[in-house]
Image (cartoon, rainbow, N blue to C red; front, side, top):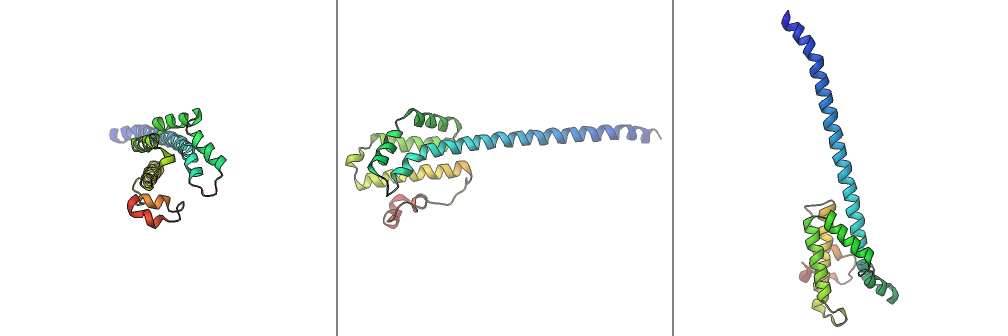
Length: 164
């Protein structure tokens, strides 16, 4: 009889504790998901800012004025802020990829760029795009570097082996 009484007293307490624990874990999980979603949105916004000048440069119908504006935008304070956001919010792979690409661009004289230099530029840019894909949504992407640029380059087949 005592056993049934103890069980009758303990059961509501255990059910309440279980409910509170479930509520706590669910709330914590929802908060973590919200934080991760905000961070992902910040990364996406940052990547768009960093990619914008390159999108202009890869557009065949760009005007000389648009090209100059895109090149000059890379040296602006806003662009540098986006680069700092990348360092803060981006994955290690993203930071490494961006740094490699930018260091190559800093060392390259684009007015005297050879075909080899152009291919190397595209290679670094493609690695940057792949790093963005991996960081945002597809860590196990099977795309190759050339496939990330296929929609921008009419003669991609000529360079595919060199890019990959």
